[in-house]
Image (cartoon, rainbow over all chains, first blue to last red):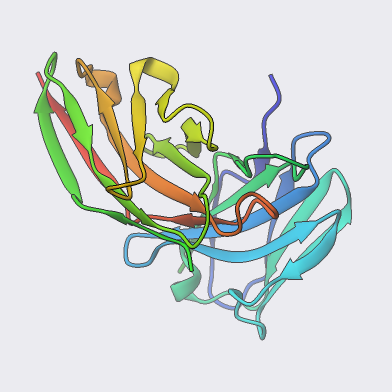
Length: 116
Length: 115
């Protein structure tokens, strides 16, 4: 059963520390998205990639967040330095863009980040 | 620009009674519409999708949704609620008709199911 895999599932860290979240998209998918979910803001799009190239990262705070896809099986989201306001659940999602495709995304179970 | 509006932030039903979660959409072209469900501490799971084929779409777990262009609505229904249906439900529209998988999420409806 193909699924998007995210690590870590839970992370507690102290303000100022670097945090790296990892995502393995579904094999064969050509788009990867990073979302952040908080009670206050709901789901926010941070960044997305197509064929490993970043298409849009306008939702990310540029000074501290970075997103990369070193290869087709790994996407990373890094926060350095982390701040308490970064506490949230971060979701990775992948999909397949194709002619006539519906555009649906498949989500991982999320990485819950708590910054103290 | 594409958008969705979920008309209720909270819905409470009794087990065994029908479920209706309301969603209106705005789109400058024929939309791709979805309903996703999120159970506590879980990721989002696709319930069903509409992509300009049949207007009545059947999904998993007995849910279905009807696309009504005249009303710009895509309401989610289920004939009989089960305790396991308690979750948050998101109405979603494709930002660009499926060209990039970019999705626009509604604010969510929290469904409570009373025994």
